[in-house]
Image (cartoon, rainbow, N blue to C red):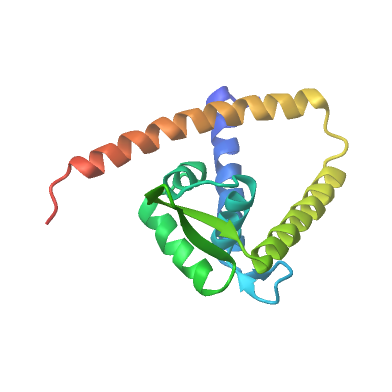
Length: 165
């Protein structure tokens, strides 16, 4: 029988293999109905704009867990491709907001359908797993995510304190 530490190592290795496969998928551009292939980061930005209507740049960065600079760079790409529009409100010229174009809405709906289809396939594949197993897995992943959030905050704060050059 394996020890708790050995089981955790097995789960960690499995998680890393799944993560590596997700990273591979993220690098494969896909067409979600617009006639143009997009990377997952682009589609997730479109999704975040669709699901957080009226969101300005800083809020969108928080939703996606990236910097404002990353949002501006991605928004520039998506605007150039015709998926989003940037705008400012008349009474507050400082904040940059985003909204989807018709092409962006079409892509958002296509991405939602893609997730629905993928979730249905995974659910069908895992149909014999009990609710208790799902709850246990979810609880463990919550704890891993909580730890990773702290670890990332620690590493990013350390990297900001290091002198450049």
